[in-house]
View (tube, rainbow, N blue to C red):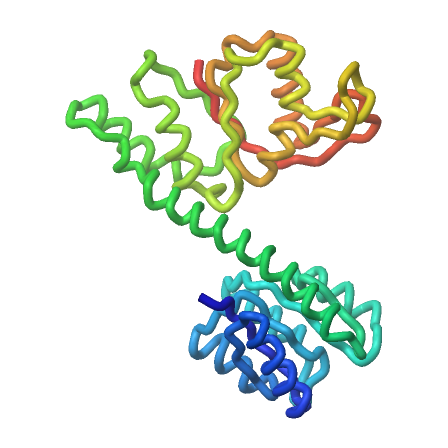
Length: 286
């Protein structure tokens, strides 16, 4: 199935020529001559193209205003903007709103095609991630903790309350096989950080020196074999949850360093000179 492309352009001949060209490039193309038509498609009809190619300045306004409205409605497709003049404020605003690229006219069809293909790949990845998150949210509801016993019912009631509460650190205790990992996934996917990543780490499976590097990351040359910069689990989990299984196996000094990073919302990679800001909630099993 062809990927969807919306072209917003007031010059009819240019718009139709672009539409013909990109249909031949396996795009499913819709057109709009101005912001009113585009807004009707995107907002009123709920049309969500994979990529939108829009002229910046149209007879009835600026496409950035429509882009901002679309983002407020939760649409995540990529936008490529064209302008007859390069304006720094407009380009800054476009990037702030999450536009994929900002191009000056005239722009060759070959270059525009390459940009749209890049936007297509980026949008596909975003949609795939969104689908995975939605699937996770449906799968990991508090009701997913199955059991008829009084204890299981109590856990479900507790989870129903906890998913409404933002937390920075949480310890999940219990015997092996009682569902501690499931509880951590429920708290993430049904909680306020569901839109962020969840990174799972088995602390017992990694030696101390490697675990520190994997948690905090490292810079090139930090130690023998560190040939490039590595983003650690804390950075990878930024905006989401870091689940540390068997944290009791982690050295106490490393636990202390981890706690400091969580409280200060910053870390320093091994061999690094600058602090890196992170916003991570941690759930751990003991």
